[in-house]
Image (cartoon, rainbow, N blue to C red; front, side, top):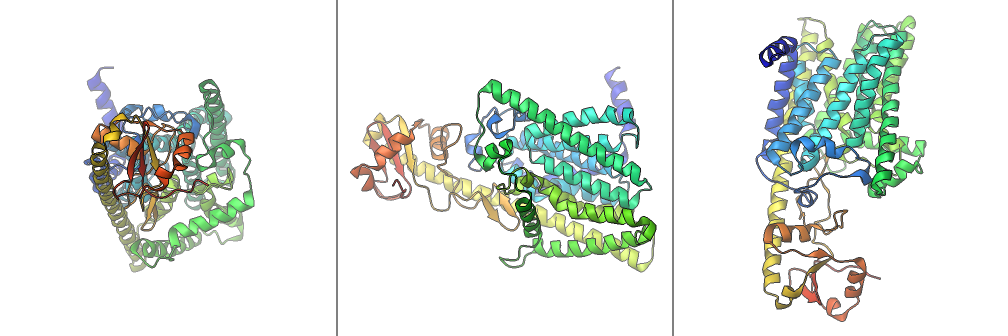
Length: 527
């Protein structure tokens, strides 16, 4: 087929609803994230990944290298950012297809919510891998559409979608395992929607739920098999980060403990008033009040209170209760795990519920139906505006923390060049840490992981064998040093010369020990 004919055919197959949702996602996404796309605003991890092949097999992300391949392995704000936005916009379109959204305002709201949700902002702070993560999300969305569009019954029809859907799930899990929770939340909310607003029988909905369950279990199995093979051939060991080694060994399965933390963390995300009242929390209160009214009305409109619809009502209530457990599903793989903001993209779907209700409302010009539509519209756009504010404030914090850290590195380099003994040093040892440099999140709320208003000069050791001060001295000041073993650090810490050293920024806080350059940020306990 000639290119002109191909694109002409494609043009006629793309629906205007998809274009509207896609354009909304791009527009709101640029409003929220262009600050990040047009500036280099790294966090502590970014500084160690200016170029990285994303070989994170030890974290279970055996396909992350493939996911990040399209944006190159460099941290390129505009390229990685626009790729991320493209995947998010396509994910929004998939969600609109899944729920068969036709009305203009819900399509606009879906596109906006998906690209501005705080989890997206947190992920953008790790922009060197954001495109890979959002490709993982897109794969889950496509898998859900395949499952939903399969014939209602029939083994052959189900099988033709289960295989590609399972492959997509496995590939997604191999990029970032947290999107398992997103897929489960999407499936639960879709089943809830079918119970409330479709004429499908309970048998047909059971077959649909079964297809979702089989796709995710088959995807998990394929992922685990491929991961174990790759792990074996690469001779790598699982990391202790976020208790990953325990997760894959299934040593920490405590369902009741996990269920308790699911409930606590779900309500903490939406209703944590411990640090006072703000717009995010107030909007969440109105959101849940509005959702309660909308669900009650939907139950009444669909006559679910009727005894003959009792099973449908009970299943609908079960789906509502299951939403938090789906959004935090990873807790049931390891009771010690606590989700940070990058891991809760499934909660975005809660904010999409008002838009979906708007779509399902029948045309009615009376006062109260109109009032409900205006309430949904006002609440949703205020939420979108607040998400855009959170994104831009977060990026301003990143810029300030980066510039503050950059200034400190220049001062470090100046001190090193003034130290005659430093010329003979080829190794570096960093002791202690700068005040306010260990935080990995800033609380607005929500807790914005990857954002800090402190220093990003963290001295943590990484699998790359270097720390941030070491990397910044090399990349920004041309001072290259290899890392120091823990045995060398322990030996240095026992010397009188080290114990008499003052902490940064006082004179004498940088010294040479044979061929090792020592920087003392703060006192460390070496007992």
